[in-house]
Every structure is written in C-alpha cells, then in structure tokens.
Image (cartoon, rainbow, N blue to C red; front, side, top):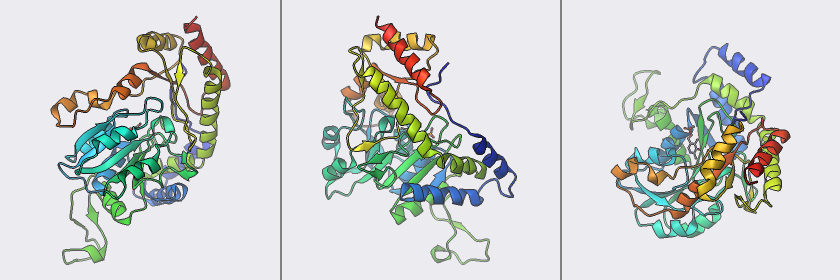
Length: 373
Ligand SMILES: *Cc1c(COP(=O)(O)O)cnc(C)c1O
C-alpha cells in the first residue's frame, strides 16, 4: 500500500532522539527551549511547543481570552479540533462556508456571519495553501476581532513571501505523524503579541506563575510558584523536541519533495476531463500537505474503492464539521455550508509525502485514468 501520508524518519532523527534519551532530563529540559528558539527563528514569531495540534488550538483560544458566549467564526471544511477546543471554553461556534475552488474560508460567508459578539475568525490553511489574510483583515477593518490561523497543514508555506506563523494574531501547528514535520504527537503556538503569548503558554504549563513581580502571595522561598488561572499539562518531552529539531532542519527538503509531487500530479492530471483540481493561488508558495482531486459525487465512492483496491492509500478531507452529531446538542448558528458539503462529497486526497516517488505518482495517475476507461 502506498500510504496517503507517512512520516520521514532519517538516521540522524533517530540518533538525535536516542541521544536525548540519555540526557539528565527527558522532559522540560534544554531541548524544549532549543526547539522553541529554532521554531521562533524559523517562523518569525515567538513560539512555544505543546503535545498536540489540538492542545495548540486550546491554548490559542485561551490566550485570546475566549469566554462563554463569545462567537468564533470557523470554516466547515476542517478537522473537528478547530471547533472542539473553542467549544470546550464555552465559545459559540459559528460556521462559515468555504470557497468551492480552494476549500478555504469564504470571504462572503465571513462577511455574513460577523456580529458584534464575534471574538475571532479562524483560518484553516487547507492542503497547505494559506488563506488570504490581507482580505480578511480588510474585512475586519477597525473591529476588535482576532485572527487565528490553524496552520496544521501549512508549516513551511509562504503568503505573499511571508511565512505562515508570522501573519495571524496567533497561529497553531500540529506535529502529528502525518503532518509536514513530526514529533509523533506535538504542536506549537506562535504569536508576536506578548500578552497573548504569556497567557497561552501559561495555560499549557498548569497555569503556573513563576515570575517574582507577578506574585500575589508572599514568597517563602525559591520553590514558590502560584496559580492565578487554571491551566492544563500540554508539555512536550525533550526527546520529542530532539526529533522536532532534526525534522525542522529538514523542512526545506520536505518542502521541495512535496512541491515536486504536487506539481507532477498536477501536470499529469490537469487535462483530465473527469476530475477537477484545487485552485492554486498566486499569492502562495505552499508546502503542500494534501493533493485533493474532485470528481462527480456519484463516482467518488467507486473511485475511492478502486484506488484502495490497487493499493493506493487515499483519504477524504473533510467530513464537514457542522454535520457532526455533537453540533445538534451545542447551540450554534446553523448557517448552511453548501460549498463545504459538495466539496466533501466530491473530494479524494491522493498520497503525498516525502516518501512518494515519481514512479508512485505515475502509477497513481494511471490507475485514476484506467478507472474512467
Ligand atoms: C491535524 C489537525 C489538527 C489537530 O492536530 P493534532 O496534532 O492531531 O491534535 C487540527 N486542525 C487541523 C486542520 C488538522 O489537520
């Protein structure tokens, strides 16, 4: 089976992890700081690491101070973690539809869902292609609304030459095994807002306050630390950070191979009348996470089964978040998202990762073509 996604683990990756396991501290040690420092430098924004992309979103929402009743606008075409973490803080989830050609949040839909209670708009960089954040900022104008970027797919991507991670008020990443770089499980939060950074990071470390000048209680000794707001334990281990450091050093190599595979698929499939491809925006230089194709909804399942039977590990991204049964119990603005629904019904993701060879791509394309013969 050619997996639809797969981690790329080098000999050096393994050596780095092994060496980290021999250190004095295997968690909350120096490699955490080092990974955070390198990520901050790479992304161009202050960054801290956590143990999943879901944790990163939870911290981001806490960081901007989401409270019960705040509305957050999210695209329907995403993984449920985008919504679940905000809902867990009491936010009212508002769904925006997506652009049919890109799967990215639709500007018109955002315009029609903004209210005076909107606290944040969440951009999900579907397939690795950044959302048009300048357009979103224009739309927000002088309103006090945060822009959160769920960049689980898009570490390494550029928007108008600028790095994803340095664009939104707060950006979250996932280092799950299928993502562009991995620590097994893991994630990160980046922001250039010092107040948000402090709040979000503290939340990921049990809410512990360690700074003398912020203590409310009299300190009885150097061991003293205190909690002002509840947090959780979202820490990442040192041996995972060792892998993260080694993976980050390979990110441009990963980007080149993902781009190469994406472009080869595109070149071979663009003339095919039976399938449609994602629209590629001129403003983007993407580290492609997915290669989605679209077919008429009545042949999506037969084609999916055909490809699986030929050992091609296809997937479907995403079951529209607003259709999950959980949203029937949570009050939310039940705006219909017809584009996200048809997008889902027509979509199949072909394998793309550093281990996909040119021969794999040619075989997959030929297998797709054979299906229509
Ligand atoms: C993977 C993913 C997440 C969650 O990340 P985990 O590390 O699996 O918790 C969130 N949002 C999107 C869009 C994702 O693809």
